[in-house]
Length: 290
Length: 193
Image (tube, rainbow over the protein chains, first blue to last red):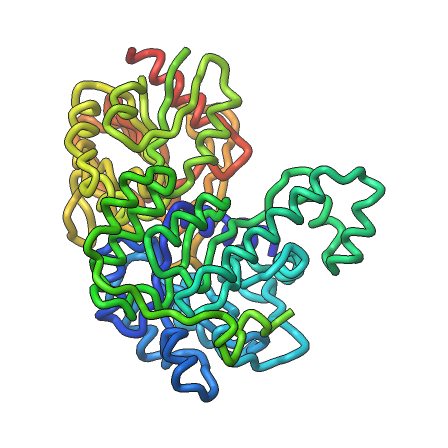
């Protein structure tokens, strides 16, 4: 397990500064690769369609996942429902590179997340705050992401989650040692990981932004807030020029500190996905999982 | 002071910077513009996704200037994706990027993440002690040109090679706590410039 966990964290390190794009078929996967995605996330419907259509959202058809693996040379990720051990076993058996235990799909277990250390391949999980991130890492997540609010095209929740994690990390960093156990208790996080964050001022794994990122400026904003990279879901293939928008977001992530480049790539992108206000959202995906 | 750049388009950039920071007489810098590329004494092409880095090199017009500097003798080291960028022949057949090094590289040669692995080996030209080698969805070199010196094989596959001012490794010394390869590269720079 020690060795696998390290190798799996290492793969996430190779993703840094990159964009991971949601795709629902091989054709979209090729567009994403061509645009410069560092990986693609295979799923049955993008989050905004899951919101619109409702029903239970599950792991994708293995056939579609295999077609995507065939179609691209970049890493392929796939989503499983929170706590759905068997979906994760199935995805691993297909030769996928990374599993997302995702709140975007309908949870299979309301009490327990997957014990991720049982698997050879890495998991990424979402978090709203530091305690949640450290619980997932203790279960074996090799990579974290903000939950944000997927399928809304509204970046406000991703910003809230990243700012929360940052401010909680700063608090631990400046706390005297005797206070750390109390913080661990309050945030329901394992003590050794609380100590790690207090010492290093960062998570022990790579942390990406996800949930509501729709424009190059959104992506650059999350990078300036300290994320290591960005997931874009509905934002690309629900816009009216996916290939162009995907390329623009990739460039904006690399040059997130250069407003001139962000301005340049944002020109004439066509309409972004429409987006919704969080107060109008019926099901808040971010509230799934703990 | 040697100014050693790390190409900072994407990937394991901060890991290389951290390793270089521990070496005397080295100033590590992240580079992502032509001006920055022209200011460094040597350059590391980090691990990451070669397709992503390749596209960004083209999109921001960095490819030709970088290629010219390498051909003019700037020391360069590619790790994993960086090795793919250097290679002049790729398998499965696909278009090359900088195409400056006479090596034929099989991309993603070991398969998906489940096949990623760690091992140790002694690389005589680099260190007399065994060093940890971390392979992440790694490529390896299938064949090399006449000018290329093979530095290391693992299971009969070539995983490290050097051609004059160019060094390529399939593995990622930057994610280990052993800086032997970084020190070897700095030695290379000192001898060349």
